[in-house]
Image 1 (cartoon, rainbow, N blue to C red):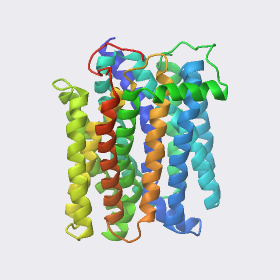
Image 2: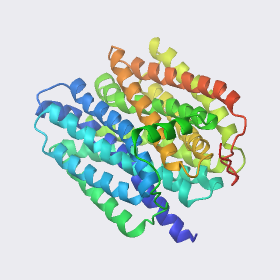
Image 3: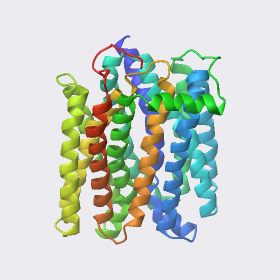
Image 4: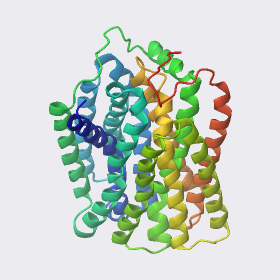
Length: 407
């Protein structure tokens, strides 16, 4: 593979993975404007975020079998077209209920992009490069929290909030054109693959029964929930608690994303010296320590805004290092079922993320405590899953070499 081809593949796959996060981050600064326009509260507007998370979680399981039966591009075309139509529906939403429904279908369409991108990494690149490629995708993905809230804050400050969804529609159309003309089909359709419910469920069960998959997929999902906790409560923490302006919130959000992006790129250097398994072990220990300190400090009011930013930066950095490695280790044992494995991994990530965002609403109070509490709980659960799950892995497939063993 030439460097030019490698570069374009990373850009297109990165854009696909960034579509759904961009759809989340860009409209966060507009919560107050949306609430005012729809005559509701920001807490109620947050339901549109939860519906998006649940839509992505459900959609992952929908597209996994389709990607394995029809190849990668046809389901991707369908998903992107659905995303465009749903985004237009969001633009014209005149009630909270309509926006919730449209956001759900927008997520169903958008998740095709992320599932296909993850599966195509496994298709197009040798397994020893997977952790590095995932780290590069996170670099592109990192443009979302850097650019999206800042763009969203300026849009809501100067235009109507509906313009956010017009921009998302244009983005999806451009990505669709790039997929049509520049992205190769990476998987031959399998006409014998059954789409009947029982074989699909059986296939997902066979994927989940792989000890290496469920250990690292669940570890990565619960670790990633820390990011969802941050996204779900960031506007409340900085705008409502610390009284930051909407525009400044966008810059703080962008600045904190540097921890996530920078850590993922540090990881691309770490994988040259250490195995992904070693990196995950150390990172999870660090994440537990930082998140517990954040929780204790929040409970005792130790941190002002600066201290809170430092704690969040630490947690996001751990997620940025951990995520590429857990993804690579989860998918390493699979070739034929890579689409289903990718879908199931994504479903875990989004479902647990949705629960994390919902958990934020259960902890009452205008403080950093809800965010810190969910971050600490999710990191501790991730650590326990990793510690216990590794005992069931008898034949580990490294993400650092090209030996793939099917179980």
